[in-house]
Length: 124
Image (cartoon, rainbow, N blue to C red; front, side, top):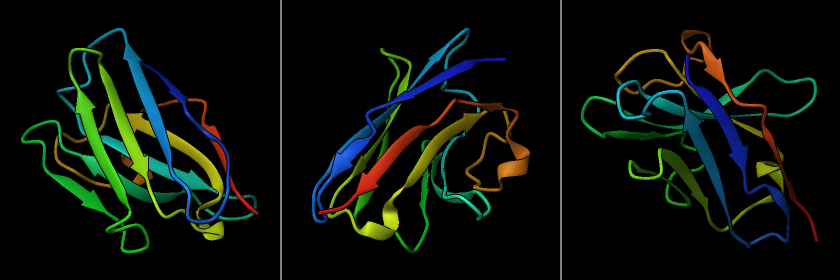
């Protein structure tokens, strides 16, 4: 299994931007899909975005479409989530995951490897 480490979270004002990173080690991230999920206390984990390991296709939840962009840097073995125009409802712990399907999906139960999460707080 690959090991994943997220970073880039923090406190940002509404309307601001953050770029989350998901660095992989142990093997490359360009085989299985990589998904970004978020979770707030008391709620189930929500799929935010994913990028396919087979053809690079992407998916975005309706709540983030047009504001978030997922990308991969194979040389750095890192997947990024650029988050713009952040809203208070985007605040959550964000996780990346892989070792699941090759095609894009945000069904959390299909992913076997998860990072530890990074906190995103959106507040003025």
